[in-house]
Length: 226
Image 1 (cartoon, one colour):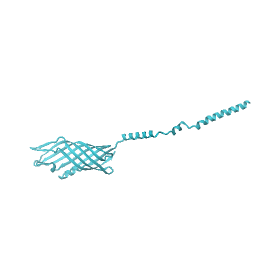
Image 2 (cartoon, helix red, strand yellow):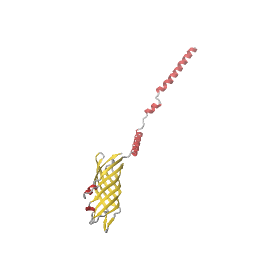
Image 3 (tube, one colour):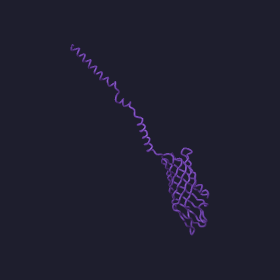
Image 4 (cartoon, helix red, strand yellow):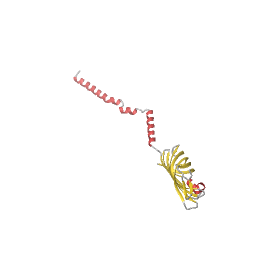
């Protein structure tokens, strides 16, 4: 075999080896492509989604600001042709509502009046905590609170009046029904128990305040999500 033929055959062999080496990687998918084709098991995806939903629920709380009007004070005062009002601003988080109770009323003489005393005016301030049995600040609720009643009463025959302060506990229950978006009515029952019933005196005449007071009313109000 001549030297030229040997060189030609070697050249062809080298060229074939180089060509095969260049083409071989193209016939096998790249590592990145293999990873793209791999699928995550459904159980893992479901577990990740459940964990994300749980974390979102923990981080997100339903918050609201609201205002309720209690006509009980107005109706009770109207019996003696007097002005009365009851307002209740509140803050809610999830199923819990923290409410302030502010009211002014005249207790009718048929209830609080005696032979020598009348015109029992009361200003109240209290705070209550209520719990809803369902979401969205609606449905059945129960609660309780603490407050103060500032009382005045006048003597029928002397131009004198007595004043006193009474702390009280309250227990209550009701139902919130939303009839238009976040506008609602709330029928409820409440019982206010005086922690320190007072006996006041004008000259030699004595008056003892009622130890408890009940309430049946129909509140109405609105709240705004925040």
